[in-house]
Amino acid sequence: MAGKVYLVGAGPGDPGLLTVRAQELLRQAEVVVYDRLAETCLAGNVRPDAELVYVGKQPGQPALSQEAINALLIARAREGKQVVRLKGGDPFLFGRGGEEAEALVAAGIPFEVVPGVTSALAVPAYAGIPVTHRGLSSSVAIITGHEDPSKGETSVRWEHLARAVETLVILMGTENLPAIVERLLQAGRSPDTPAAAIQWGTLPHQRVISAPLARLP
Image (tube, rainbow, N blue to C red):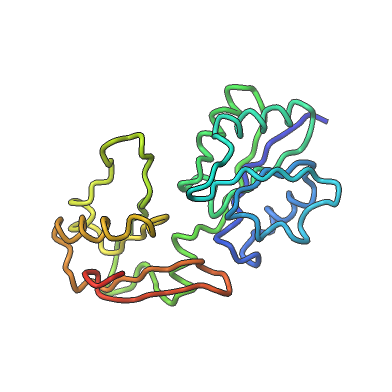
């Protein structure tokens, strides 16, 4: 059988939010290449003889480079194996799934994208926060709070977002939270804007801090 790679979204952390299609593919996979944020979805969902390859993606700790991950996916598929690349959230939302898809296309490897429940919507929902609400918010933007440091200057247009979008969902923003708050305030966002910082979203130890924007820790 020819090898194939599945770029699979594992959802935001709660194993109950893994999609039926993702679970089906995990149980069939001969190789599972997974990130730290997808680890909670492995138990009970993989074959006993499956090769499990942890590729890290943990802040402040070394991880396999993206180039090495791409090469691993290609190599295992060329061995004729069914490979699941399991990624936290959705593979095409700040998950580098697009980069992996490009590498697979260039190598002539067949692949399939399996969307996952994104933390951008699920985590606020678990905290009781709708990202849109009639009479309050008719627009939402999803923004990275951790850009590639090699870029030098930010490509996020904070001055536009602060004034034009009602709900801002910022992912991976814990480390840069003070700077993000300052940029939004300088760009004209009201200091009294309701805000929340959420850690470990959808998991039993989820932590939520709510405060006006100017007082958000």
